[in-house]
Image (spheres, rainbow, N blue to C red):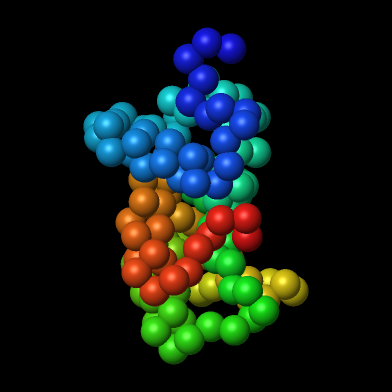
Length: 136
């Protein structure tokens, strides 16, 4: 398919770079719609390499934060809490409390309702404290 955004041989770093480029270059329009239109179902699959999963709400995603061995420093936990507070936006008419994270059975942390355009800022915050969502 010509004009593909994701290369099938991309790893997590390349997928992240693609997302950062797409969100930086496409201010007024929705960058995810463009990627989804070009790639179809492949787009969501490639995003999983960076811990980003479809969250059943249009243009909202679940971000899985990798916590190797379930060990997290206080600084890292504060960063994750800040990401949940700032980007884990709830949605209207939701019956559960907004802005929460989930600890998975593999001891990672999931954050719901993240917008595609927020991903680069979240990754920058994670980089600053040694966290990642890659392959989570």
